[in-house]
Amino acid sequence: MRPRSLGPLALLALAGCGSDPATPTPPVTTEPMPATCEKGPGYVDLSYPALEIGEISATVRTLDDEPAEEALVFVCGINVCTRPKFTDARGEVVVSVEYPTQKPAFKYGDAYTYGEVGVLFSGDEGGTDFGTVYLPRLPAVGAPITPGERAESGGVAITLAESGRMELDAFEPYDTEEGRALRAAELPREFWPEGLDHGAELELVFTLAPMGARLCPSAALELPNSDGWDPGTEVEFYLQGLDAGVDSGAQQFAPYGEWQLLGTGSVDESGERLVLESSGLPVVTNVGVRRP
Image (cartoon, rainbow, N blue to C red; front, side, top):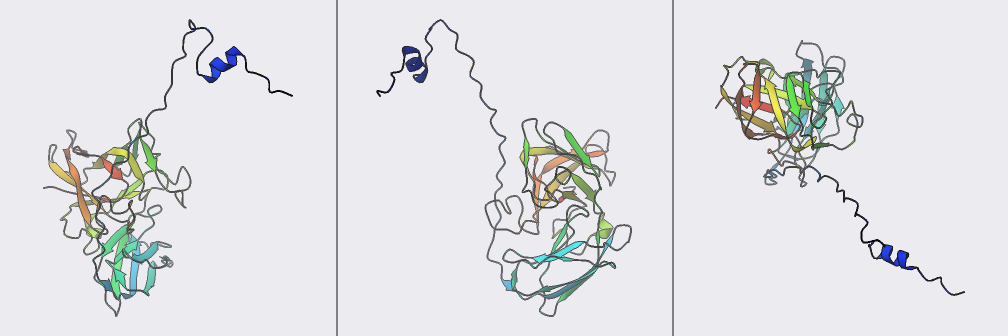
């Protein structure tokens, strides 16, 4: 049997033309361009020496001086991390560091139930006792980070552009809509562990979750003026680098364990808010503030 020949209308359709030149061409619809994720300067530095750390111990408590039970604790460097440990009912924990570690940081808190805090330290073969350290509890209910809407938690507000999006790997507890919501709390200065600001001379520190979420494009950021600075006071905003990885997505905006200047802003006219004005927030992580 011979193959059936195509008629003139079918040939016109395959060619992308209509049979009647007077027929109007339907409008072409295009999908909106996806929001661009900002790329940071990048701060990966593999030159740090590997240190023998030994055993790390600490007692973790909440800001109301209650034991922070089942708080996540580990030691992480740019080359290796310990297995995660959890505090006991007294808030106590011991972590054994089995491998030489480059640029070690003592990290505690899960950035979900509690804030996450990271402190660089030099280490000692005989171990290090951090004594009592403190964590803020994060709100049990978060504020959804939705394009075009203001999300506020613990006085911290993030606003994604209407065409924006958030990028975040779907691992527990960030694998649900509620888990990916904004949670934030201040860590008051009297509760800072020694060396937290790593020479940045910060005056305020806020812990944010979901830790590591990329905001594309960078989002508007407001913080509470908890120290009562006068309206119009100029301020600087800093990001803490808490991602120890060395891949292209890690340490883009701040060196691991350190604080990097994000931008400048001021206290608004009401005296209630610290507003980032010169840039936006590219990634959800801890934010520090100081007056220049």
